[in-house]
Each structure stands twice: as structure tokens, then as C-alpha cells.
Length: 376
Image 1 (cartoon, rainbow, N blue to C red):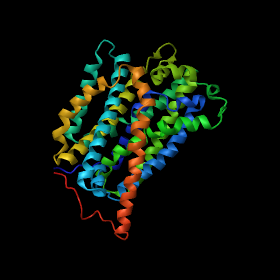
Image 2: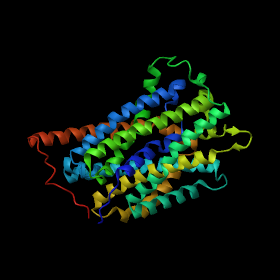
Image 3: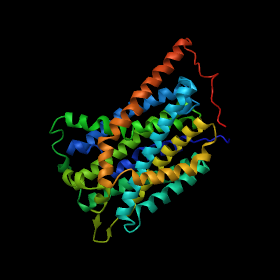
Image 4: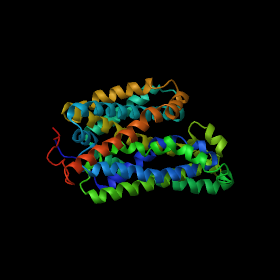
């Protein structure tokens, strides 16, 4: 099997695209009302802590992905069921992200096209990219991710020129106190997207320079947090919290407010492109993580599982919910408590405890260098 590698700039772009991803579809921290931007900003601080925790797990076995680390902490009999759970979890979240794409596209671009066709077309493209290798994802992301930052910057300029932005819509600040902000952060906002970055443990080993890898990851988390906070501020200061909370796709509604001299308007197509790019990146990483899980279980190259996996994910993205309202409700009331808390926080804490315990038993020397899983 050919060794895959990613550059630091590609990792930086992937993490930004992954974090921004489908989070631009909704307003982050919306339950905090006018203080949603504070919730997003504070969630970034928590995200730095969460990602540092994931990096600590990876640093105990820096050349191994999540499933190989699980295999080192436990014997293979125990590791396989755990790996299967995480594989299904990654595929499930990928299905949800792809459903976001389908709902967005069918609402704004192809209203007459069945959502089944839209989702299947996307997963076929993602499957082809992943079959070529994760390096292709890195190169594609490196090229297009800067457009996200440029778009948000231009959107601010256009809205200012249009006289649409108003800081009075986020005033008074913390009128209800800090408690609503804290409640909006846990468990949803810190889990999405920062807790979901557990899937990137499957990508970290592709960067050989451990020290620079850690710095790049932390810088990219900060950069993505700034972008998401900016996006939340733009939406609330332009639409107002009442309209933003009712809009199905608030960022698209915001871009439709741009109208300069009755000539420069209808730039919502650019917003759809930016969101679509993030969705492709995020779903690609989750599917890649699931494929690496299958690779560990069956000891076969993950490319063997690309075609059947993307076909199943495409089908499941349709059955996952009845409509967009059911889809959003499930994401806010069910997924955080049944999946995010146990798989993003509870088990990783236990995994780290087992790894540190094994390291302590071996008197500070890593016990993992002589017990490796070799990729076929």
C-alpha cells in the first residue's frame, strides 16, 4: 500500500473546511438569542481544549490512527466491536452532512430534482475522490478553502455598503446573563464541530512533523472559530435574531439582502458554493474515518470498501429523516446525547486513561513501539 501524506497547509485547510462545513447551514448558538456570537466565540475556546485532548491521545502513538490506537489500548477482540461502533458513527454523521447538502441544493438550486439524485451524485464524487486518496482531498481543500474567508469578508463589505448591518440587533449584550450562553454551548455547540474532530485522529498520522502538526491544528481551530463567529455576527446583525431563528438557511437569507444600486445582487449562489465546499470536506473526512475503521477490522485496504460504503451512505441519507424540520430536530435533541457525549468525550477519556496507565506500568516508556498494526 502506498504511503499517504498531507502537508501542513493541507491539514490547516482541511480542519477549517471540516469545522465550518455544514455549521454554516444553521446559526450557531441560536438558543442564546442575541448573544449567539458570544456562544460561538466561547465554544472556540472550549474547542481548543477538546482538540488538545485529542492531540494528547494521538501523541501517545503519533504514527497511528484512532482505530490502531484503540487496538493498542485493548486486545483485538475488544477493539473490533469498538471500532465497528465508531465506523458506524462516522458513516451516520456523514449521512447527516450529506442530507444537509441535499436539502440545501433542492431548496435553492435544483428544486425540481429529487433529493435522492442530488445525494447520490454527491457521494459518487466523494467516493471517487477518496478512492484516489486522502491527498486529493487535501489538495482540493487547499485550493478552495481560502474562498470561504474571502466570501465572508466580501459579504461584510457588501452588507455595510448596503446599510443592512446594525449592531443594535445584538444589543444589549448579555441581557439575560451568561447562563443562556453556557446552556447553548453544552453539549451541542462544543460537540459540533469540535467534538467531531475525533474523526481527524485518522488524519493526524499523515503529518510526520508532530510538533508543527500540533501547532497547525490549534491555529486552524482558532481560524475556523473566528470564521464561524464572524458568520454568526453577520447573520444576526443583518437579519435580527427573530428572522434568523426562523430561517431554514439563514446565511442564504443574509446574502439575499445584498443589493447595491439595484445591479449587484443575488449572490446567494456564492453562499451555496461555500457551504457546499464545506459539506464535501466534512463528509469526506467522516467517510474516510469510517473506511479506515473497516480497514482495521478486515485488514484490507480501505479502497476496497469505498463503493459499497458510499452507496449505503447515499441511501441512508434519504431514510435518516422525513424532512428538514425532522432532520434539524433530531440533530438538536437526539444526536448530542446518544452519540456526541459517549463517543466524543466519555470513551476518549477512558481510552486516554488506559493509554496513560499502560505507559505508567512501563515506567514512562511507551509500550506501543513494539506492538503495531501494519497497513496491508
